[in-house]
Length: 142
Image (tube, rainbow, N blue to C red; front, side):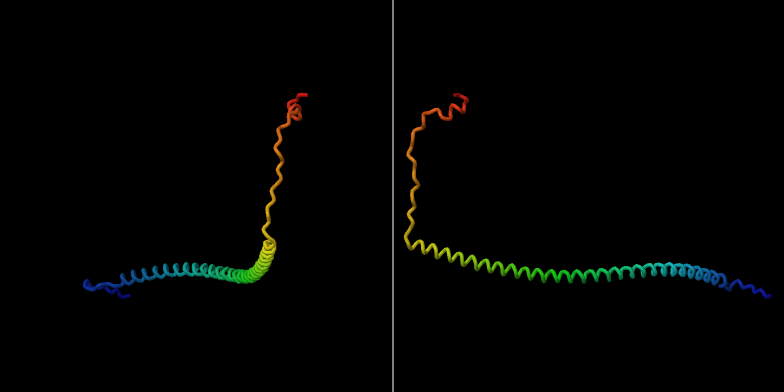
């Protein structure tokens, strides 16, 4: 075996190389662990994304059903509105004809002459009775 003794003026790079190799090996190990943790996190995130996608799909289906129900309700409301409008129009026509009929009756009764109001019959004033009708019974006298 041959041993080489470096000169004092020469710099020995072997220790620095060994140290750099050890640092690189440690960094590679740390990065490999971090990559494994990141892979686990990515797997969990992917599972959550799949669950969220399924929930969104169910929500979209429910929303589509709700939209169909709302559309049917709107159609029913329009039909009810039309029925109420027809009823109001019929009621207006009936009231108009009744109003016209009453107007014609009044005009017919006014042509016979104005009505003379009759005076109510008055009873003549009488003096109060002087008898002991109810007063004595009320107070218990006989």
